Length: 140
Image 1 (spheres, rainbow, N blue to C red):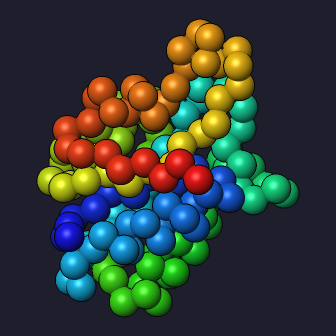
Image 2: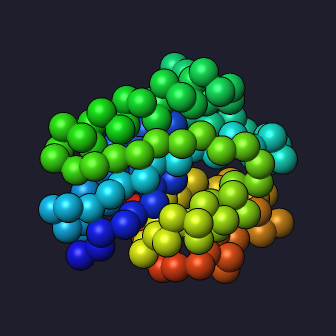
């Protein structure tokens, strides 16, 4: 069980499973830090999707997403702190996890196209390499 968790959300339909996973590995007094990184350098990989109708590509959408997720986590009985960061996803998550003293990072997995696999474009793999702490990846 962990007490200081960093959760990376990008607004995908998978976010609920990522948050459920984080809640399931917490101690009762845990702090769940929810972060959304707006990253223009990976725009060639497609927009970050929120369900099927919206995309999280601007600060207002990201703040709304974070607010909703923090409310959900608080309703589950845990402390939550949300933040929107700008920059490279991997470096910003790594820096933020270090500054918070996070024990674990929980994130989702973006399914890659055959072309992305061929060229080795994988934010998850890059995060596993750069993270200052263990990374738990929700793959469903």
